[in-house]
Length: 193
Image (cartoon, rainbow, N blue to C red; front, side, top):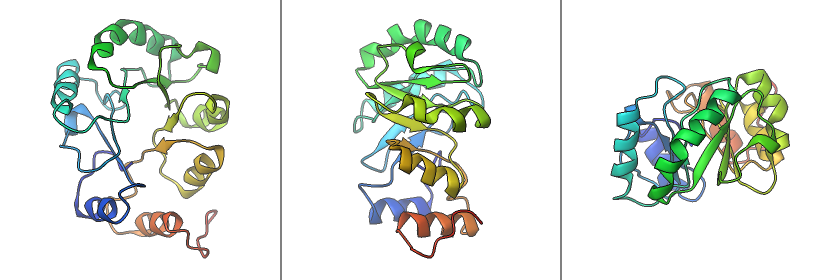
């Protein structure tokens, strides 16, 4: 899922691969979903705006149901994220969308709230990379900030349901072409360059 990007490159990929490419929106950059698979993030990685978050959720009611919405979280802190879950979950439940809990540093599969429909792997990069495999199981897993071929391939091998990243589609540079080659199964791709 290209994050916060609905430019021409992303639109062409969505047209070409409607069942493989999705989109994830945040409150500060919300755009009308243009594809079958989309999710609604909370924007906490940059700056959480509660009013805009709920406005986005309300706007989304007019469109196709999102794969999930992301409950507010605190980057790198499981305890504070868990507190936000208990605060916001009762407000999110009436939307009747699948709700994702963000696994942050210190989270374990046992501490993910049972009500969570999805597990969104956030956290700081060393923790995230070392812990994704622990959350694969009975709920779909989404991994945020996947911006390298190595991490994309790692998530695919683990059976992660979806990923997002901001860097892939910014320009038609090497990262874009690496992604296209990987995505289209080019046997010449070089993952570890």
